[in-house]
Length: 181
Image (cartoon, rainbow, N blue to C red; front, top):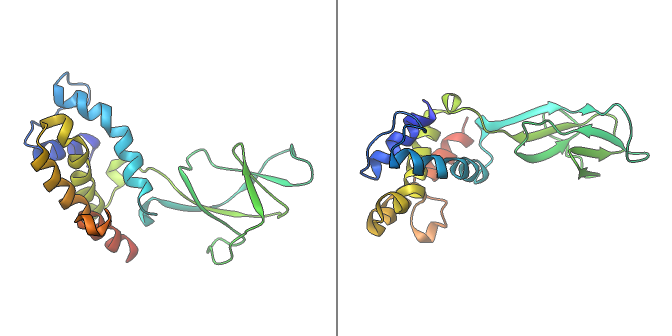
């Protein structure tokens, strides 16, 4: 699955034409190009997706710039820190640290970090792709079609009813399957 596949299927749900690339010159490609970066941030910030979660031992910086605290380098791929731990199994959380300028500062000599990344679309599991297609269709429907009724239907499919607070629909299905992995 590619981002063009996801975008084209979302466009189809909006009753619009597919794209061949994000730069194909069509109105659809222009709108998708404008919204896709925000869409990625949105879908990955809604839930700590297991398939997009990494745990690794933190590397200590060569010198101590902040006095007596050890400085651990936050990996460049980190999009959201989920926790800092004493062990690779993430069973014992470290509470005595602070984040500063790309570093975790702590008195500890060894730490592990659990965080979210944005994996390439070809690494997304099927349940997430399905949710992503509906979420993108929801995001682009109004700018694409100006059809409030269709937008409301797509939003409900993606996120459920208003009473579910955007925690239902395809999102709930994907989050449930992800939690069982």
